[in-house]
Every structure is written in structure tokens, then in C-alpha cells.
Amino acid sequence: MFASFIVPVIGWWGTLESDAEVNGSRWGHDRGRTREHVWWMPIGPWTLTIYGRGQSYRKLTGLPRTSIDYILDEFDASFNNLAAASLRFHLDFSVCDNEDRRAHYEDLITRLTERDPIFTDEEMAILRPPGWKREDDYELMPNGSYRMRPSTPEEKAVYAASDERTAAYNERIRQARHDFVDIMPELWS
Image (cartoon, rainbow, N blue to C red; front, side):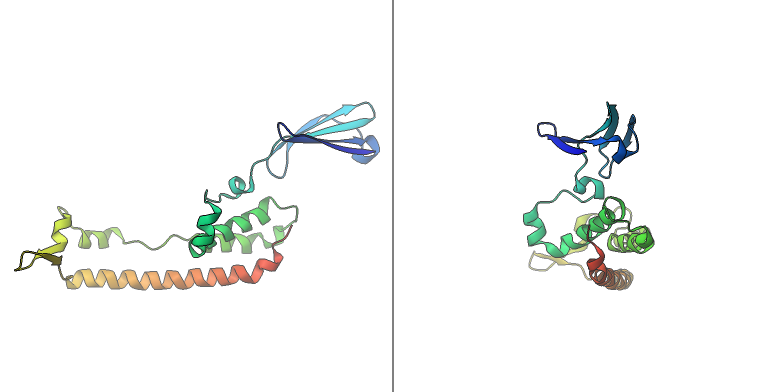
């Protein structure tokens, strides 16, 4: 015998199974696939299993809280986070066993969530030396207006190095996205 029920007010659900189906009644507690509490208890010849409320996939996968409107409007900015969350879900919370793909998925997650390159401390010391003020970036023109001060050769070198790092980063992200799209057919539950 097997019966299933739900307690809608608190979002819990449960099953009642005969001893033959669960290999004997037992007492126990565990965590389920979405980290919900699961309790087993014997009731006569049956085992009652109660499942508590699990966590949302968003919370389990670390997906930032974002509205669907933002995702649709800024899909490019949302893509990497959505792809990484999908990979985390399929590794740890899906009903499918993807353990044989773990190293590949984790590599993709790392590549998709790589932070943009920033200026190093040494470069910032050139761009914003001690005592720097915002006004230092401007020069007064003869007519009384201000314009951006031309960059020094050292500052130009810093910007050129930053541009190279950014171009390499953009290429790595483009390749990681391409690699994710290639494995999308594997992502089902």
C-alpha cells in the first residue's frame, strides 16, 4: 500500500507505505534533496514519512535575488549567474546523478563567475597617488571652463594593461558561455 498527502497550510507533505515497500518500519530523520527535514515513524504495519518544507532553488544555488523583468531586460548581465545556478542545481539538487560531470560543471561555474579584472594596487597608486583629489583630473581652460587633464605616459600604460586584461577576460567569458550552451542538452531532471 502507498498513500500520499499534503498539509497545505505549512507546506509539508507525507507518505504512508506498507512495511514490504520500505523494508520494515523504522524511526529516523534525514535531510531531503532540497534540504528539507524528513522524518520516518512506524504506525502499525506501515511507515509514515513526513517531509518538511525545503529551500527554494534560488537559495540553494546562490542565485542573486533579481526580478524576471530585470533578467529579460538585461539578459546578458544575468546569463552567467543563471547558468552557474543551473549547473549548481544539476550537480547537487537535481534528481539525476551528475557526479561523473562534477569536475566539468564546477570548472564551468568557476569560469562563468570569474570577476571582472580590476586595477592592481600598484596601478591605483599611479592613477590615484597619495593626496589625490577629484579636481586633480581636470585642468582650467583660459575661458574659465574645465576639461579632463591629458593622461601621463604612465597612466596610459596602466589603461593599456587594463584594456588587455579586460579583452582577455571577455574572451574567457565568451568561451565559458559557449561551453555552457554546448552542455545545455544534459541539463534536465
